[in-house]
Image (cartoon, rainbow, N blue to C red; front, side, top):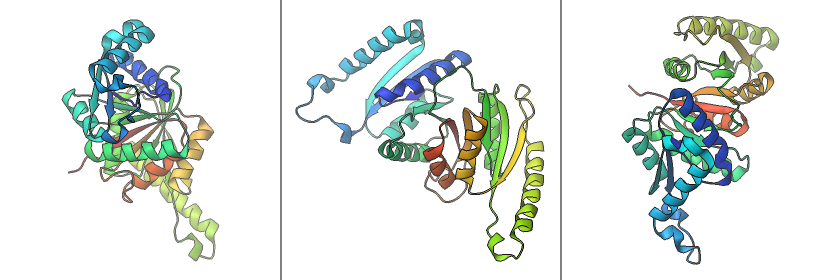
Length: 279
């Protein structure tokens, strides 16, 4: 399902949604939700007062732009709470993936995206793909950001089953909060790095690897998780990042909640957010 605001920056998300639809041989649902506070001003064009008119307009535009692809698309236009409608529609249609766009880099657009994602992730159990880049075929290189938790292992299984094509690298960004209190900080962080490498290797060995995913690279780096992730993704040119999103929302301080929020502000790749499954 593609959840879109129908804005001018939605083309990248649509491109990716169509590529995935074709790869999966699936039906694509395009959902636009107009929230009450988004109602037009009194002097705005009155064509938006009737729901069937914009729906017909959207469908006509899609058929003109997409040709035969539009035959595999269902378009839904609704009003109400966006997060609630997205979750309900994804569940009713048994969607495997929710796709949203985030091409713009303005502070306002990032804030708006964060608020919407936060509300969606508090509700949904469906993975969410945040699209940033242009679609150039299937994903080629993916970075799996992990904290080596059970939730992170579950996210890995979801990601590899959905997107087996890219070469995966597992990234564990670790911190050494006591480094400033010891006499030899360099040796202390080196010991922490060696321990992190062993932990990541053991974690990776326990993960089921998709037969087409290849042998993953294991990367441990010292530093703040979000900044370290963004720097590594830019360095290797990955086009997909996989992260676990806490069901408590992006602004939760537990698990990867706050890291996800910070990472979304600096990543330029697409991001697959897999909601944490609560027991």
